[in-house]
Length: 131
Image (cartoon, rainbow, N blue to C red):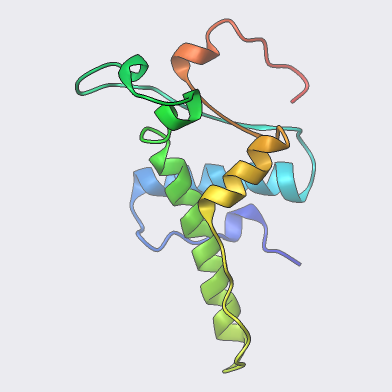
């Protein structure tokens, strides 16, 4: 049985990061593990330091990746913490280490329509109901 969202730990113990990690943990738990909701939509403001997001090459997802780093980091921290707890409980068992890629995790659920990543600009005018 997986621990509930409130039991995930933040190894960095700073407020801003903790908020992102806990909200990401709660979203993953409610959507992917419990099925209480259909979709997770990660939303961030884009505040460019130079050229606007439209000037970056690539697809929408390629353009958003630099601004969505905190969500990627949160997912990585959550699964890293889980793996460390699992290693402690295995008591020296030489089982293979958990192989996890944040990119493949997000891509898998993005392809299934479970995870979306958007900026506030792309969320304007959307009606979200029955998620």
